Image: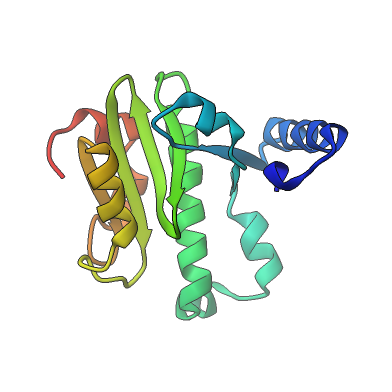
Amino acid sequence: MIGQLQDAGNTTTLAHYLDLLTGAGMLTGLQKFAARQIRERSSSPKFQVLNTALLSSQSRLDFAEARKEREFWGRLAESAVGAHLINSIVGTGIELFYWRERGREVDFVLRAGKTVVAIEVKSGALKNNLPGMEAFDRAFKPRRKLLVGDEGIPLEKFMLTPAIDWVLEEGS
C-alpha cells in the first residue's frame, strides 16, 4: 500500500497511523525479508494484528463455526502465530519479517544475527506443497524451516514456545 502511493505526505501520514496502532497494541507492520536492507525498507509492510480479537470480532462466528471455516481459521491461526512471535521477541534482539517473491510467500522469518528461521503456518496443508518455503530455502538457506499446523508442529505447542527457542535449536 505505502509503496503504491505517490504523495510523500500520504506515506508519512500512513506511517504515523501505523505507529499509533502499534503503540496501542492493535496492529503492526512486518517488513519484507530481503538479502539487501534497502529492499527490506522500500517494500510495503505486511499488516499483523497483535490481538486476534480484532479479526474474530468482525466474523460473527463462534469458536466451533470458526474452526469449520478453513480459510478464516487459517487466517486466525497465522495471525495468532504472528502475534505470539512479536510478543516473544521483545528484548531478544531477534527480528521478525515476512517474505514474498513472484507469488511465493513464507509467513514469517526470524533473524538473529546471521541465523535465519523460516516459518509457514498451514491448517490442513500438505507438507510437500510449500512452494514458498522451497523457494526461500534455495535463496537464503535458513538454519531451520518450520511448518506450524496440522502436518507440522502443533499450533498449541508452537504458541507455548518462545521464538528464541526456535532460533537456538538445531534441526528443521
